[in-house]
Amino acid sequence: MLNRRSFIKQVSALSLAAVLPPNAFSNTRQNLGVALVGLGRYSTDILAPALQQTKYCHLAGIVTGSPHKIPLWQEKYKIEDDNVYNYDNMYTIARNEAIDVVYIVLPTGLHSQYSIIAAQAGKHVWCEKPMAMTVRECEAMIKACRQNQVKLAIGYRMQHEPNTQTIIEYAKTKPYGNIKEVIAKAGYYDSRTDHWRQNKALGGGAMYDMGVYPLNAARYTTGEEPTAVLSAQHSTSRPEIYHEVDETTVFTLAFPSGAVGRCKTSFEENMNYLWANCERGWYELEPFQSYSGIKGKTSDGRLLNITIPNQQAKQMDDDALSIISQRPMRVPGEEGLRDIRIVEAIYQSAAQRKQVQL
Image 1 (cartoon, rainbow, N blue to C red):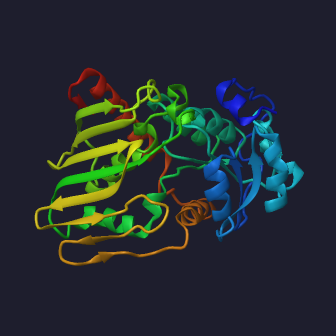
Image 2: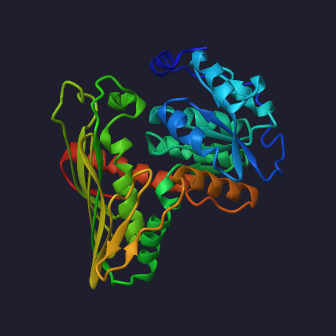
């Protein structure tokens, strides 16, 4: 088995031969087995603990290129030998009845490849955001899941969060009149100097990693799809680190109603803010995309401060219930595709220094 660093640096095409037909095992369980693909920080510190709090799914398996992690995970989570895979034999997960869902928690540049392997193995696919590197990759993921009759969900946990859901509802009911402007900012200071988020081929850059938060927020806050990227600009204060990808990106979106989205994302600045200015007032969330503590208020004094025990647990339970009850996913692959289509236009606008129609 490859260690994680070698795996990331030397991604090879895997053979998909010997995969069983789609849906080889029909699922009628009310609690789904989930296999995490990639045992980095998000899986280790966030998702695996969250799976101990879920009601409708549980941690059943792992896929890793780091053999030294396997005994630690098996001891902590009682994972059976038959439910442990590496990146070369992952396709054989098709034979495993204990695993219903494969959750892709890898660098963005690998999302499409391993989501397709999971789908062709007849497993439902949960994929971390952003969905993939390109529109073409997103479309390939959607096609693979459709052809193999499995569901696809993208890990936009904020759309499962109750205060965010209130903002989404406001886009429909317009309690403060039409929205004129949305400001959305998400970023943090990243002190790392040798990480995949600084690697272009693996999907690095602030826009791909954090930028989809303000982008997605501008879309769900207005309830509209943008008609144009009015402007976009990349910058860096540490070119010795961010010489392949953007450290900071600022972009402006135009929406059909006339609303404007002003967005910023960065690996050099801490920011976590969403604000909607309307005809008869305003509302905001600050923070709007932290793992906990989402809260906000409105211009007439309403508080948006519903708390939940764990965002990731709610996200995974919502998605598991969609599978069990055969309902549409709250955040399907098509939602991830919409964002990546805009991300491509943002990069085009920044490169050409001009407005790009969508």
